Length: 219
Image 1 (cartoon, rainbow, N blue to C red):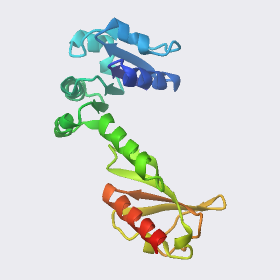
Image 2: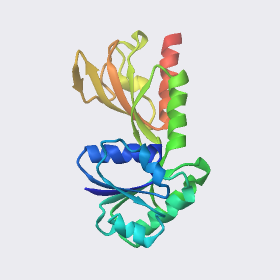
Image 3: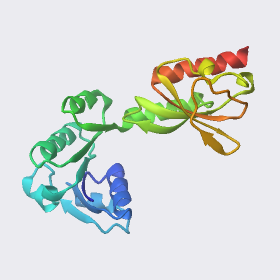
Image 4: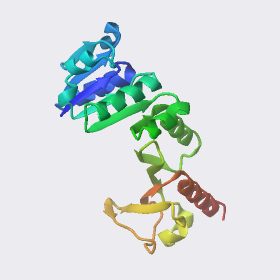
């Protein structure tokens, strides 16, 4: 796969090396020559110094043959414009844009772009780690609107149906692992103490699950 990464800061340099390490052809664009020092010394992709809005710069990066482009500078307006150009002018099939300031996220969404809001996502994960230790996030879709969580069934819910614990339409059981063996559950599945349960949920769905877990502990 041929990929262009626009912006060689901490996110861009890490992304570029990850893609290169997996065997993809990677071109990195940045306005500052010194930014390429952020790249891992083992990186062997292309580096292009210049403005990503410059047609010549994009052409030198190979945008006409790119399978994907990630625009990850710290400027939300620049990210949105470059991503829109890549999609509408060059028909790059896969365009992903970084949202730096949450207040500008709506701009990217109005353009219909695939958005990763690092600030919003990171703040949400830190919040969970600070005071929601009973549930662990194992996968996040989009910017965290839907996530997959893992929790261990407490003794207070031993012998109950999974549907009694997960009683929200915004929380769906994914798997139960017991003694090293995973199964696909339904709401009638009986849970046992120590079962590792995976659920897919929205923020409201996981909030209701936490309330049920806490209610069981207090009963």
